Amino acid sequence: MTSEGDRLAELAKRRGFFNQSAEAYGGVAGFYTFGPQGAALKDNVEAAWRDRYVTREGHMEIDAPTILPESVFEASGHLETFNDMLVECAECEESHRADHLVEDHPDADIEDAEALPNEEVGTLIGKFDIACPNCGTALAEEPVDDFNLMFGTNIGPGSSSPGYLRPETAQGIFVDFPQWAEYARNQLPFGVAQIGTAYRNEISPRKSIIRVREFTQAELEHFIDPDTDEPPLERVEDVVIPLYSVTEQQSDDGGVQEMTVREAVDEGIIETDWLAYYLGLSKRWYERIGVDMDRFRYRQHLSGELSHYASECWDAEGELGGDWAELTGFATRGSYDLDKHAEYTGEEFSVFQQYDEPVTVERPTVDPEMSFFGPEFGGAAGDIVDELASLAERNPDAFDSSTVTLDVDGETYEVPTEKTGFTIEEVTESGEQVTPHIIEPSFGVGRLVYTVLAHSYQQDKIDGEERTRLALPPEVAPTTVGVFPLMDKDGLGERARELANDLREAGLEVTYDDSGAIGRRYRRQDEVGTPFCVTVDYDTLDESTVTVRERDSTEQVRVPISELAETLCTLRDGNVAFREL
Image (cartoon, rainbow, N blue to C red; front, side, top):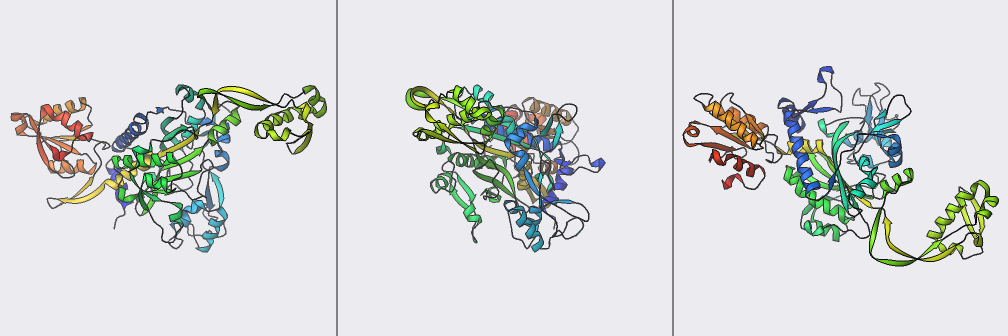
């Protein structure tokens, strides 16, 4: 029996959805080209994402470079922590994702080996006698090492300015946060979105466009004041979401729990209200673009899976060919990224929040006698003074004694309190600097395209004949309408071509086809997901009406040509159902 993946790969290549790049040169693993149908579908998914997460949520959108200097990724932690588990075959020298080998082994029954330490994964490879998929050599004695996934490059001639292709679009947003805060008039909360290409040097690209080395992300970075900003949870509180929590994953008989967003928050299953808001909002959006809700869940990250920046994370997952694939990561990133870029650049990555009314507060300060510190402590004087200022802010009681004890770079210093100039002053403040926390929904566009194709792929019989169709929502379908003449004679072809051009001018995606029997033409459009077909026949010439056929039901209605463009637009936009015609 042909697998779902094989069926979809054959259709994708034959009908122009996607294919491996540079096949004439043998192809390159992990790189795919979207053909005419696939590029249109991808564009429509991106447009639907932009409509939901930028326009309707009132966020701003940017387009940052795909290459950034090494210092950005040193600050973000990607140089040290952005790794996958690699095991290399000693015989054929083929490299493999060690955790994937364990997950794929039929006896292992381990769903998320990525959450395990490298050493434990290596032990499991030996326990289950896992061999190299390429040549069959046992891998039990081979080490499991970290492999950094970033593509390196040099900026400019020579090697003096190393850079990296971005592994996520997010850093392009974070590094210019002060600019975006200014555009937002320093008013929290605000969001910055971006759709763009990211790159990861995957050890073992696989499953078509599900795991590749170049891909499109649609990311939103939502900056909030963690103490005051609350999401509009009432908008989504009644949305029922399928949750596969850590507790359920670790239970012997655990499974997906269906509950409303409000129930998940009240029961503490989702800890961050903002994440709950976006899970509810996104559930509706996934349905809108054609993800099958019977093959969908939100899975919470185990502690070992959490990225270095995340305190809570849920993945939206779609079932594909019996396996679950991550479609979106929803993460609470805290202030990690902004703190790191502030630390490395010395710039302010915070927002000044104005109080409703000025407040008077007691503020501990120091005013050290430098005439004492310089001669007494020499080159360490500056660091000691900095530590005094920090200590005064975090622990004013340390200055109650006659001396203050400080630890600076591993050395202990005793400083006379009278030389520190310590005092507590009353200060009137009009506001404070707040480092925002970040809520991040990060969508894999290619994975969404694949999932929508897989979940919409259907086979049935029409008039005793086998039919393959893609039950794509009209909003995302690559083509909205196919226009056919009943036959290309007696002026029918000319009228159909004229009508096709008129519909294009009205903003509809149109294909014209006069080749073969009308039934065959319908089947071709069904197979690429075109939701509506218009047939120009002899009655068209007499009555100025056409037949409009709906893909899924194959039902047909007559529509006046004068109303055709408006009717098709309302059908595409979901403002009216075909049966209502």
